[in-house]
Image (cartoon, rainbow over the protein chains, first blue to last red):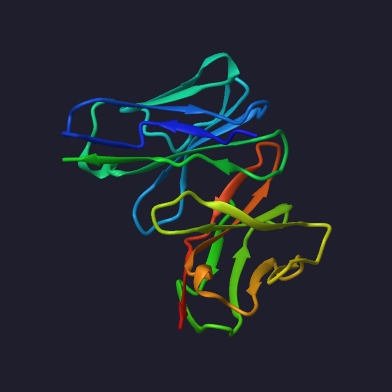
Length: 113
Length: 112
């Protein structure tokens, strides 16, 4: 079974630039999560999709972050414009419906200069 | 809302000894409790989980216990090995959205 795919793996941008991350979840997984993990901290949920609908985006800074899940499969997370404090690893995870294991992708390490 | 506290933040044990990491949660409706291991620069990976209808679960050297009355759960690693060195996260989930509320993590150091 293929795992969660993410790209790019690394990205360096300057503040005020924009950036986009892509995630392809495990086939058949209804739920998709985007997390932000700052060095030394636990993952922080940014947004949760169930199929192609948003379940929770209460911690997504909507003035600069946006996300969509096309046709209930792939998802993109965008930051525009980026700030220095956005430097983090952005993790995508997916799971089947219900309380079950979340499978994480390798993450995208974003550095904002 | 749900809150998960995890202790200790750093744990250093001698190779071969046991390690115990403890978490408490605030919402009695929580019903799913996974533990994730994250090695440096890698993704979190599930190592064991427990549901609220079970008090203990074992998988080789790893075990998790759940005390619903006290609202705490613990990770036990026996016969620790160098490859056990990592950051361990506990989490709790409830409700129809099944979101995970994460602990702050425990850095486990195995001394040779």
